[in-house]
Image (cartoon, rainbow over all chains, first blue to last red; front, side, top):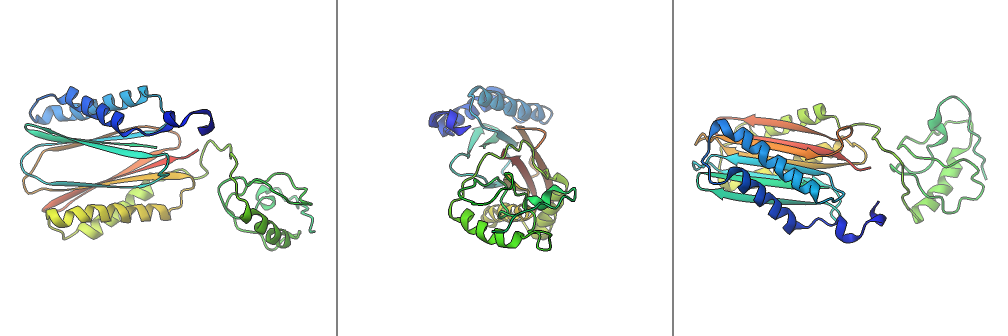
Length: 111
Length: 187
Protein backbone atom coordinates (compact mmCIF):
# COMPACT_ATOMS: atom_id res chain seq x y z
CA UNK A 1 0.00 0.00 0.00
CA UNK A 2 2.89 2.31 0.64
CA UNK A 3 4.00 2.00 -2.98
CA UNK A 4 0.77 3.43 -4.21
CA UNK A 5 0.95 6.62 -2.22
CA UNK A 6 3.66 9.24 -2.23
CA UNK A 7 5.73 10.01 0.81
CA UNK A 8 3.87 13.25 1.59
CA UNK A 9 0.56 11.57 1.80
CA UNK A 10 1.74 9.00 4.28
CA UNK A 11 3.79 11.32 6.47
CA UNK A 12 2.67 12.29 9.92
CA UNK A 13 2.80 16.09 9.82
CA UNK A 14 3.05 17.45 13.31
CA UNK A 15 1.96 21.04 12.61
CA UNK A 16 -1.27 20.07 10.95
CA UNK A 17 -2.22 17.83 13.83
CA UNK A 18 -1.25 20.45 16.36
CA UNK A 19 -3.59 22.96 14.71
CA UNK A 20 -6.42 20.52 14.57
CA UNK A 21 -6.12 19.76 18.26
CA UNK A 22 -5.90 23.42 19.23
CA UNK A 23 -8.92 24.37 17.17
CA UNK A 24 -11.01 21.51 18.50
CA UNK A 25 -10.20 22.26 22.10
CA UNK A 26 -10.76 25.99 21.80
CA UNK A 27 -13.88 25.51 19.76
CA UNK A 28 -15.54 23.24 22.27
CA UNK A 29 -14.43 24.72 25.55
CA UNK A 30 -13.91 28.36 24.62
CA UNK A 31 -13.53 30.43 27.76
CA UNK A 32 -15.81 28.37 29.97
CA UNK A 33 -15.06 27.55 33.55
CA UNK A 34 -14.97 24.00 34.85
CA UNK A 35 -18.48 22.66 35.25
CA UNK A 36 -18.78 19.16 36.52
CA UNK A 37 -21.98 18.39 34.70
CA UNK A 38 -20.69 19.58 31.35
CA UNK A 39 -17.16 18.25 31.40
CA UNK A 40 -18.18 14.80 30.16
CA UNK A 41 -19.83 16.36 27.12
CA UNK A 42 -16.80 18.56 26.50
CA UNK A 43 -14.35 15.68 26.49
CA UNK A 44 -16.53 13.74 24.05
CA UNK A 45 -16.90 16.75 21.81
CA UNK A 46 -13.21 17.61 21.76
CA UNK A 47 -12.27 14.05 20.94
CA UNK A 48 -14.98 13.68 18.32
CA UNK A 49 -14.08 16.91 16.57
CA UNK A 50 -10.40 16.03 16.57
CA UNK A 51 -11.12 12.66 15.09
CA UNK A 52 -13.41 14.09 12.43
CA UNK A 53 -10.81 16.60 11.33
CA UNK A 54 -8.11 13.95 11.29
CA UNK A 55 -10.23 11.67 9.15
CA UNK A 56 -10.73 14.51 6.69
CA UNK A 57 -6.97 14.63 6.18
CA UNK A 58 -7.35 11.37 4.34
CA UNK A 59 -4.12 9.79 5.55
CA UNK A 60 -3.82 6.01 5.81
CA UNK A 61 -3.55 6.04 9.58
CA UNK A 62 -5.39 4.65 12.54
CA UNK A 63 -5.80 7.29 15.23
CA UNK A 64 -6.02 7.27 19.00
CA UNK A 65 -7.15 10.56 20.51
CA UNK A 66 -7.13 11.11 24.27
CA UNK A 67 -8.34 14.22 26.05
CA UNK A 68 -7.95 15.13 29.70
CA UNK A 69 -9.83 18.04 31.22
CA UNK A 70 -8.87 19.04 34.70
CA UNK A 71 -10.09 21.51 37.24
CA UNK A 72 -7.48 24.09 38.06
CA UNK A 73 -6.98 23.99 41.77
CA UNK A 74 -3.30 23.34 42.09
CA UNK A 75 -3.31 19.59 41.65
CA UNK A 76 -0.43 18.10 39.72
CA UNK A 77 -0.69 15.61 36.87
CA UNK A 78 2.04 13.67 35.09
CA UNK A 79 1.38 11.76 31.89
CA UNK A 80 3.80 9.43 30.14
CA UNK A 81 3.33 7.29 27.09
CA UNK A 82 5.29 4.35 25.78
CA UNK A 83 4.75 3.15 22.22
CA UNK A 84 5.73 -0.05 20.47
CA UNK A 85 5.46 0.74 16.77
CA UNK A 86 7.34 1.63 13.64
CA UNK A 87 9.18 4.90 14.17
CA UNK A 88 9.43 5.66 10.49
CA UNK A 89 5.71 5.59 9.83
CA UNK A 90 4.00 6.30 13.15
CA UNK A 91 3.91 9.33 15.39
CA UNK A 92 2.40 11.12 18.32
CA UNK A 93 1.42 14.70 19.05
CA UNK A 94 0.19 16.28 22.25
CA UNK A 95 -1.15 19.71 22.96
CA UNK A 96 -1.74 21.32 26.31
CA UNK A 97 -4.19 24.18 26.54
CA UNK A 98 -4.50 26.54 29.44
CA UNK A 99 -7.87 28.03 29.99
CA UNK A 100 -8.51 30.52 32.80
CA UNK A 101 -10.01 27.97 35.13
CA UNK A 102 -9.33 24.72 33.52
CA UNK A 103 -6.25 23.22 31.98
CA UNK A 104 -6.86 20.58 29.38
CA UNK A 105 -4.63 18.44 27.26
CA UNK A 106 -5.20 16.31 24.19
CA UNK A 107 -2.90 13.64 22.82
CA UNK A 108 -3.11 12.15 19.34
CA UNK A 109 -1.34 8.92 18.38
CA UNK A 110 -1.30 7.93 14.76
CA UNK A 111 -0.19 4.62 13.34
CA UNK B 1 18.32 -33.86 -1.25
CA UNK B 2 15.55 -34.92 1.00
CA UNK B 3 12.13 -35.02 -0.49
CA UNK B 4 9.32 -33.63 1.55
CA UNK B 5 6.56 -36.12 1.29
CA UNK B 6 3.77 -34.62 3.25
CA UNK B 7 2.30 -37.37 5.32
CA UNK B 8 -1.36 -36.78 5.00
CA UNK B 9 -2.62 -36.83 8.51
CA UNK B 10 -5.24 -34.20 8.12
CA UNK B 11 -3.15 -31.53 9.82
CA UNK B 12 -1.82 -28.82 7.60
CA UNK B 13 0.76 -27.44 9.91
CA UNK B 14 3.15 -30.32 9.55
CA UNK B 15 3.83 -29.38 5.99
CA UNK B 16 4.52 -25.85 6.83
CA UNK B 17 6.85 -25.63 9.76
CA UNK B 18 10.17 -25.44 7.99
CA UNK B 19 11.10 -21.81 7.77
CA UNK B 20 12.16 -19.95 10.90
CA UNK B 21 9.26 -18.61 12.86
CA UNK B 22 8.35 -15.23 11.50
CA UNK B 23 4.84 -14.06 10.92
CA UNK B 24 5.23 -13.68 7.16
CA UNK B 25 5.68 -15.81 4.11
CA UNK B 26 9.30 -15.90 3.03
CA UNK B 27 10.23 -15.35 -0.55
CA UNK B 28 11.91 -18.35 -2.00
CA UNK B 29 15.28 -17.26 -3.28
CA UNK B 30 16.85 -20.45 -4.46
CA UNK B 31 15.63 -23.72 -3.16
CA UNK B 32 16.48 -26.38 -5.64
CA UNK B 33 14.43 -29.45 -5.40
CA UNK B 34 11.85 -27.91 -3.14
CA UNK B 35 8.87 -29.19 -4.91
CA UNK B 36 6.54 -28.40 -2.05
CA UNK B 37 3.94 -25.68 -2.56
CA UNK B 38 4.57 -22.24 -1.07
CA UNK B 39 4.42 -22.41 2.65
CA UNK B 40 3.64 -19.99 5.41
CA UNK B 41 5.20 -20.26 8.77
CA UNK B 42 2.87 -19.80 11.65
CA UNK B 43 5.57 -19.75 14.24
CA UNK B 44 5.12 -23.36 15.21
CA UNK B 45 7.89 -25.57 16.37
CA UNK B 46 9.84 -27.70 13.98
CA UNK B 47 8.53 -31.24 13.88
CA UNK B 48 11.48 -33.45 14.50
CA UNK B 49 9.84 -36.82 14.72
CA UNK B 50 8.33 -37.30 11.31
CA UNK B 51 7.90 -39.59 8.42
CA UNK B 52 9.94 -37.29 6.26
CA UNK B 53 13.35 -35.73 6.40
CA UNK B 54 12.52 -32.26 7.60
CA UNK B 55 15.72 -31.69 9.55
CA UNK B 56 18.15 -31.76 6.69
CA UNK B 57 15.98 -29.50 4.59
CA UNK B 58 15.58 -27.06 7.43
CA UNK B 59 19.31 -26.78 7.88
CA UNK B 60 19.79 -25.98 4.24
CA UNK B 61 16.80 -23.75 3.92
CA UNK B 62 17.60 -21.82 7.07
CA UNK B 63 20.92 -20.82 5.62
CA UNK B 64 19.36 -19.66 2.41
CA UNK B 65 16.56 -17.78 4.09
CA UNK B 66 18.76 -15.98 6.54
CA UNK B 67 20.88 -14.45 3.85
CA UNK B 68 18.04 -12.91 1.92
CA UNK B 69 15.03 -12.22 4.04
CA UNK B 70 12.26 -10.43 2.21
CA UNK B 71 8.76 -10.26 3.51
CA UNK B 72 5.94 -10.84 1.18
CA UNK B 73 2.38 -9.87 1.72
CA UNK B 74 0.77 -12.36 4.04
CA UNK B 75 -2.74 -11.55 2.85
CA UNK B 76 -3.78 -11.98 6.43
CA UNK B 77 -6.60 -9.64 7.26
CA UNK B 78 -7.07 -10.85 10.80
CA UNK B 79 -4.72 -11.91 13.54
CA UNK B 80 -4.57 -15.51 14.75
CA UNK B 81 -4.83 -14.37 18.32
CA UNK B 82 -6.73 -11.19 19.10
CA UNK B 83 -5.59 -8.60 21.59
CA UNK B 84 -6.91 -9.97 24.87
CA UNK B 85 -7.92 -6.92 26.80
CA UNK B 86 -8.84 -8.88 29.91
CA UNK B 87 -5.38 -10.36 30.44
CA UNK B 88 -3.65 -7.09 29.70
CA UNK B 89 -5.90 -5.27 32.13
CA UNK B 90 -5.10 -7.70 34.91
CA UNK B 91 -1.38 -7.42 34.23
CA UNK B 92 -1.45 -3.63 34.22
CA UNK B 93 -3.49 -3.57 37.41
CA UNK B 94 -0.91 -5.76 39.11
CA UNK B 95 1.89 -3.46 38.02
CA UNK B 96 0.15 -0.34 39.23
CA UNK B 97 -0.88 -1.83 42.58
CA UNK B 98 2.55 -3.24 43.21
CA UNK B 99 4.45 -0.06 42.42
CA UNK B 100 2.07 2.55 43.79
CA UNK B 101 0.68 0.87 46.87
CA UNK B 102 2.48 3.02 49.43
CA UNK B 103 3.55 5.93 47.31
CA UNK B 104 2.85 9.52 48.18
CA UNK B 105 2.42 12.05 45.41
CA UNK B 106 5.59 14.02 44.86
CA UNK B 107 6.07 16.06 41.66
CA UNK B 108 9.72 15.16 41.22
CA UNK B 109 9.44 11.40 41.68
CA UNK B 110 6.09 10.99 39.97
CA UNK B 111 7.47 12.49 36.81
CA UNK B 112 9.94 9.64 36.47
CA UNK B 113 7.57 7.14 37.96
CA UNK B 114 4.96 7.64 35.25
CA UNK B 115 7.58 7.09 32.55
CA UNK B 116 8.91 4.05 34.36
CA UNK B 117 5.46 2.56 34.73
CA UNK B 118 4.69 3.12 31.06
CA UNK B 119 7.89 1.25 30.24
CA UNK B 120 7.16 -1.62 32.61
CA UNK B 121 3.60 -2.09 31.39
CA UNK B 122 4.87 -2.02 27.81
CA UNK B 123 7.37 -4.78 28.56
CA UNK B 124 4.69 -6.91 30.20
CA UNK B 125 2.34 -6.43 27.27
CA UNK B 126 5.11 -7.39 24.86
CA UNK B 127 5.54 -10.64 26.79
CA UNK B 128 2.07 -11.69 25.75
CA UNK B 129 3.54 -11.85 22.24
CA UNK B 130 0.46 -10.79 20.31
CA UNK B 131 1.75 -11.21 16.77
CA UNK B 132 1.66 -8.22 14.39
CA UNK B 133 0.28 -5.89 17.04
CA UNK B 134 1.49 -2.38 17.77
CA UNK B 135 0.97 -1.09 21.30
CA UNK B 136 0.49 2.31 22.85
CA UNK B 137 0.57 2.67 26.63
CA UNK B 138 -0.38 5.95 28.30
CA UNK B 139 0.06 6.31 32.06
CA UNK B 140 -1.14 9.34 34.02
CA UNK B 141 -0.39 9.94 37.68
CA UNK B 142 -2.00 12.81 39.54
CA UNK B 143 -2.37 14.02 43.07
CA UNK B 144 -5.58 13.68 45.02
CA UNK B 145 -4.77 16.02 47.84
CA UNK B 146 -6.42 19.04 46.24
CA UNK B 147 -9.38 16.91 45.21
CA UNK B 148 -9.48 18.14 41.64
CA UNK B 149 -12.33 17.33 39.30
CA UNK B 150 -11.06 15.49 36.26
CA UNK B 151 -12.31 13.80 33.11
CA UNK B 152 -10.35 11.48 30.82
CA UNK B 153 -11.83 10.80 27.40
CA UNK B 154 -10.50 8.77 24.53
CA UNK B 155 -11.72 7.85 21.09
CA UNK B 156 -10.06 5.83 18.37
CA UNK B 157 -10.31 5.40 14.64
CA UNK B 158 -9.39 1.78 14.01
CA UNK B 159 -10.55 -1.60 12.87
CA UNK B 160 -12.99 -2.65 15.53
CA UNK B 161 -12.69 -6.32 14.68
CA UNK B 162 -8.98 -6.58 15.44
CA UNK B 163 -8.05 -3.62 17.65
CA UNK B 164 -8.84 -3.11 21.29
CA UNK B 165 -7.79 -1.35 24.46
CA UNK B 166 -7.55 -1.91 28.20
CA UNK B 167 -8.20 0.64 30.90
CA UNK B 168 -6.89 0.49 34.46
CA UNK B 169 -7.45 2.86 37.38
CA UNK B 170 -5.70 2.88 40.71
CA UNK B 171 -5.99 5.22 43.66
CA UNK B 172 -4.56 5.39 47.14
CA UNK B 173 -4.73 8.10 49.78
CA UNK B 174 -2.64 10.70 48.05
CA UNK B 175 -2.45 9.87 44.36
CA UNK B 176 -4.31 8.25 41.54
CA UNK B 177 -3.02 6.55 38.41
CA UNK B 178 -4.72 5.78 35.11
CA UNK B 179 -3.23 3.46 32.52
CA UNK B 180 -4.62 3.11 29.01
CA UNK B 181 -3.22 0.35 26.81
CA UNK B 182 -4.18 0.20 23.12
CA UNK B 183 -3.44 -2.72 20.82
CA UNK B 184 -3.55 -2.07 17.07
CA UNK B 185 -3.25 -4.80 14.50
CA UNK B 186 -0.80 -4.14 11.69
CA UNK B 187 -2.12 -5.82 8.60
